[in-house]
Image (tube, rainbow over all chains, first blue to last red; front, side, top):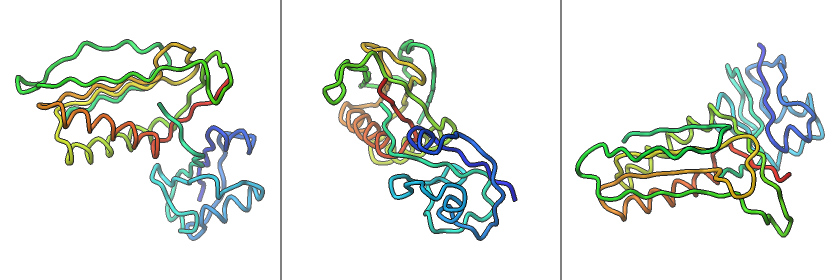
Amino acid sequence: MQVKLLAFAQARDQLGWSERVVECEPTETPRGILARIAPAAPVEMWRVAVDEEYHSWDDAIGSAREIALIPPVSGG
Amino acid sequence: MEKQITFTTAPIDIPPAVLPSREIGACVEFQGIVRELERGQALAGLQYEAHESMARRHLERIFDELCAAHPCAAVVFIHRLGWVPVGEASLFVRVLSAHRGEGLRFLADAIDRMKADVPIWKCAR
């Protein structure tokens, strides 16, 4: 299945892209997917959201359509 | 609770307060203004971005949770995105409640929760 990956703020700056589509399996985890496409990504600095809900790096993505990489937020 | 959540790239135009009932006794407002000095560095402004649909979803949930703890009648939340020059507001929040205590606590907790969990980012330029 195809999953849209979104990178915001520092995550986008570090990865060099803001959006890409990746072929994934439902049993894959966000950590595994990112290790495959961006092995140097500092995932311990970021949170991850699956379909707009915060998600563990180590839980399977299931039927996700979107994975968002969420560096520390700073609204206001 | 009435909730209005707006993201805008234009300067924040503060809407007139509309009281949903005659039981409103408190109107609590907050504006966050971009300051010139950020960690000792002089700035011309800040660049804001958001995962807008996710931010909206989480703000709605936060407001519902806070309303259970501090009953309020309405919240207006406006956050700017894009470039915000020093001296202009990046955030406006208005809370309407029957009594000041609930409104003040709702406002303070809403901003704390936003700063912890809502996917909005500022970048110094």
